[in-house]
Length: 572
Image (cartoon, rainbow, N blue to C red):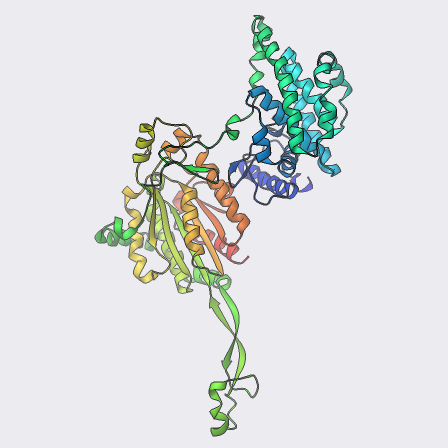
């Protein structure tokens, strides 16, 4: 916890929250032994999406919880990932809601009981103590049902982890413990005996959960007949007890039409209308030339000098390579093609190749532009910024691409219409037509492609933004170049936004996919990823972030900031 100590639980900024979550994610990966897992809003995710961990003590409020509590919750989730097989757990989950909750809690306690590190055990104990305190403050225990659940949790956890129940809590649950002794007693030895065997443990946990669920049903029936104000007030809080996400265990939605695609937790309703275009197919030649003139005028007005940009990039782009060249020396590697000189000019030393060094460039950089509607006002300045940096990279023989991502339609277009015709099934996934645009391809020279940059001024191209799919597309193209050094620079003014997808799923569906995509790229580490935020802080998502004021896009300060970020990732 030493490295987390500088971030207090009160008054953390969004940047500090992001830093804290990244550090906790590193802790999670180290303890779980799974390098593929990351945290999104303090919930664990992997390549398939959000991981279903639903024990109620796992999720303290990240804005108000202390660092010890957050660390304890992270350790608890890491232990769950390490010791619990998700497929076995999912296969043995009961159908009834109350039984599922109890099996969830018991499986979490089983995983925590297997911890051997004393520091981790202390973190887990502290987190659970904080949760119990919150439970009591919420007064959930003031009903028979609330007390029953609290008692079951305390007794089973104590039996598995061998942590004693505090005297205060023991006095509190004394009556309920006596009532439950006949139900719980026979199961406790079996839970302890099978804690190293998940399958056997789950069968015991199911039987215990079924027994307790019978008591819960009887209590709910009894309390529903009571009309006291106090009972009504407290029972309104009971959903907090059952605050578990059942949809995480549900199978992925299917479509009889075969048009629903499920991949790594990210769903797409239909890809039939997606397309990739070249800017010359979308914008007339005269409009390209007109747009290019506008960008040139903007660049002249901003007057960013090119030479310093080239100088700053040169040192991190060129690699020094040993080569053997013909040199005037009397030793070195004999050049067989010059053997005749030994006969015709015995004193000529140029039959040898001496060793020298030469700078060689093997670098590729891709610029990925967010062509969503809110980016339209910045297009001319954005063109000026790209003009300077791409020209500098071209002078250094760096391969460059300029790509853009947008959609074919507003509000879903044909996809949303077809989805509605299919009865609007829940959770359709991405619900708009993706449109990817190549402004400059890697194989095209900047001299020939410079005019194409004017196409980004065509306002009808700017619609909605599906960032993560655009980023994956750009990275696939970049990897195909097989450069020794490579980087992708994403220029956007905020998180992904598509109205149809947001309305049909949850509002964070696209943002989660972007976070997961960037996290995978960060772990792969073969490509540098830079986020340039126009009026927003991209460091909350991207490992290297540059925030630029909208009025500063294209000026010397913004160019220098982007170049410095590019230097930092290429020099690693």
